[in-house]
Length: 254
Image 1 (cartoon, rainbow, N blue to C red):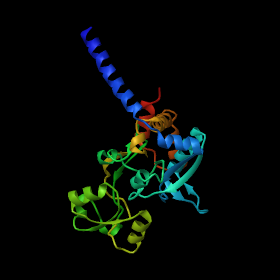
Image 2: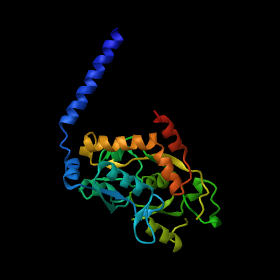
Image 3: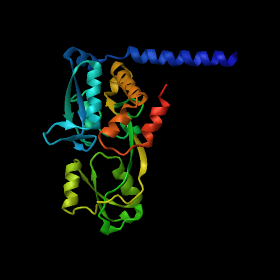
Image 4: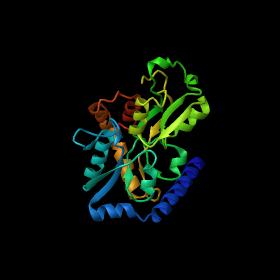
């Protein structure tokens, strides 16, 4: 009985905390979306097959499809804004977008700036592309070598500090790929084992994290996993099946 009372007391404290948070919500972004009948979502345009431009110039990809489903479920118009790793959080802070789905790894330091609502929808690890002539066998083989990276990517500092690589950071993927072609970096095969597996998080403004918009987007992610929709999109866009999505689908199946 004492345990039950303690449990009830703990629940009451938790409920009070949630109520206090809810009372602080102004729901500015949510209200603006409802009033205007439009949601602005940030996505990558240089990260095939998650977000890229097709031959007609239209923005397409797995994350673009997710954005479309958010707008459709809300019953509002969708406006897509292209973002990059180096500016996606700033765009959210500056209200240039109402949220973004843009291949962002869920990191503690980022949670202090933007509202990352769960469950995470995807995951990835760190790896390199390199010409076969380099014959890379181990991460230590990168020591002292120039390696192209993207500004804003968390793995840059890790690879630099852990393996002594000389990171040359570019604004986006297009610039980094061109640098490979121009041989500015010793980066074309992926010979190493991926490291630092990190789930991806989509984000809403920090102030909306525990409010209507944050709760709604969290529900979208639960339903994507439960319905196996993300696995369908993975197949649609020719992405190699991931164990992460299979595990999440099982976890949320009920």
